[in-house]
Length: 536
Image (cartoon, rainbow, N blue to C red; front, top):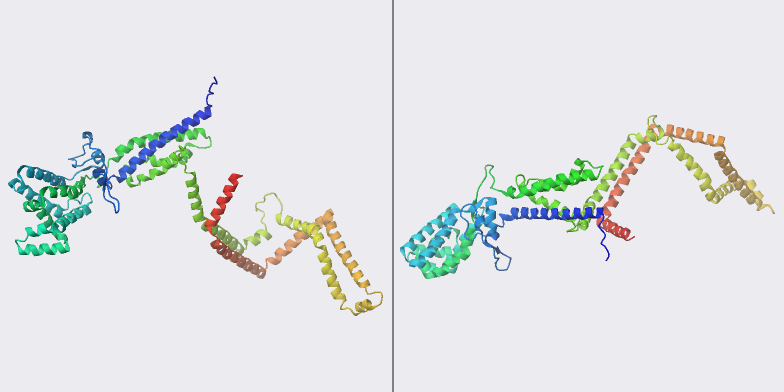
């Protein structure tokens, strides 16, 4: 049997580190889930309480919600439909059942029991209905839903009650007010307009023995439980701390995570500073900057910004290889570069040209080229201007002149012939029999000898030490004389004007060309080049 070789130490360390990264990534993801649940709990409390999902153009869907355990009993009396989530998490948010709405619903429950015991016409039922009428009036006048910021829920309750009385059961309601002609006229007007001031009267009429008897007690109470009770269940009271903010004990749930991540952050940065000798502990802190969102106590300060923990969680999931954010990071970087590349390049180029223009206008370039200071920094103790001129002369003599020699001969021949053609003796000589070609041959020989002699003189002067010394002195004197002449006020001003206009035209044309370039096209070309480079 073949023995399985033990894994190498670097491989074991890599596996352990990956296992630790995945474990902490899962913990960070759980903390982020808790943060999102806490931030969305109050806005979505109706869903956690009733389990209803409302979709556009579709009927409401009721999801089964786990019942509330006794251990999670919230502060105060829980709502009748309290679930596992609301019963447990209401304590974190300092939420308790609103006493008035809870008492209202409890009276409705007692009314159902009284009706079952003695019927709708019994004195006990009449007394209970009178109490519900009074509570309905107080609910509308006092707006019991203000604390929970659910005034819209109260308006929805009023609208549903008005619709029930003035539209769905209009015939029954009209028969009950037909005794008094004034009430009948007001009722018919309210039925046509569905006026909002009739909500109180709608409740008063709904909680009467005559209406319940004619409309059907069980049917109306079932409608109330299905259409009104759920809305009243969502109302709550939330305690306020001394700082004027609503009670929020999220920090108690978040503290263990913060402590864990703080310990891990200190240990990890210390390990990085030990592993990389060039990185100090402070540098390691900046290295893991995104982990600061995990150890910041959002439960106490800046609670609404706790969603920023999605940043370190994303990094950790990528490092743990649960998700691959390389492509997303690449697209984000390219998008950022594409958005600022054009503006940044224009600013840099225009700024450089502006500095050159300023240097030209102030004469700094002229002084730098023609009057170098003794304290000017030298790279290799060489006069670059002189060397450039010398290199230009050698390049011209040894490389350029041999290649353009036929053109020079043709030009010189044409010049000599043009001068001689104006001389009568030359015309007479060409007209003599047997001597017509002699002047032309003489001119060709003269041109060739002159050019050859001039070329030999130049090469001899460059190769001869004394000639080279004289050439260098000529170059220096030429540069000095040129500098002296250029420094004249008229010439300097003209040079400044010409160079400044040239740079201004360069700026305008560059900005115009850059505005015509499509940044997306450049990014696409860059992507194609990167893909080609990877394939190679």
